[in-house]
Length: 431
Image 1 (cartoon, rainbow, N blue to C red):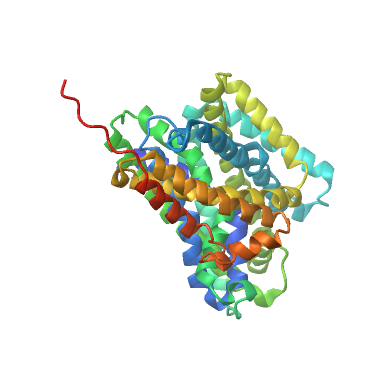
Image 2: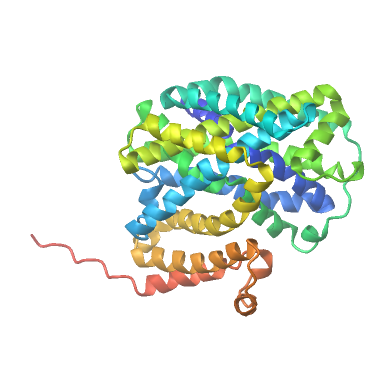
């Protein structure tokens, strides 16, 4: 494995490792208790496996994720990909990263007032904008400098957890009592990494192209290598901080994963632990925000023709405004949207790898995505709190509905139906 793959793999790890990656595994750990290993296995599939496959899927096409979505229909490609970029960018992903960075690095030492949040986000987004202005230098800055520092601080926290936390896990909570693996699988949605990977893919592919790799086979191979490096790092971190969470149940109740990690850091290292955690969070959220600003800038520049610098200015400013609404507001709106988007993204990624097996028939894409979107839309509206008793009574007949995976069978049925009605291949020309 060459140096470029390692550096870009480190960059990809840093881009993925953001706010959701820190706050959800500890929550899974404390709630799953003695069922931790089964739950974290499900979480890793959607939190690591799918993102790596998504990055690789983008390397199959010449441009970006829109080319994958265009296989359903050009209008779908435009709308869905734009929604994905807006969701992981200025509407949810970037503001969430900034507010999590604030709540876990600054709030423990301040009153957490709106003024402090305003000052913190001002500095945070000025730095994000400054690094995002030159995407070609981002690989070196993140892959060579920020990621090693991030990994070092995580190692210190995790080693401390293994050596200093001696309490045993408790019985799993209600959510993880029946099907911990599938519950963990659905919880992996909340990291946003599989849809973020559709955006990060263009950064990774572009980085390899800048290093002279131009063949399709070479790009896929190199991207998979970088993805494996990032994946190993993510699995190690998720498992470690999730394990720390599973040891914290006897230490009291916590409002979220950030509070669990803060409590663990304080328990192990006192004030130094809180400072250490602040460094981890600030680095993780900063690198992710930079990656998302760059990805949004490149995508919307290509889509609209507006200059890259103007796009990242708008994305950064919009993220800055939304971040100042507070973390709870951002999370309350983002979860239902992710519940709708994620299954569609998963099916699109899977179809990309099966593309040759069904001859790339558009009917297969349309059938699978249509039925997935219908069931995912119901789940999203339900997550918003909309009551639909008549529709719910029908949806409950779907296999895996109680596990939050009611879209799986409709996706398969839609794809198979599309395959039956696909247009026959055109006969070869005799000319």
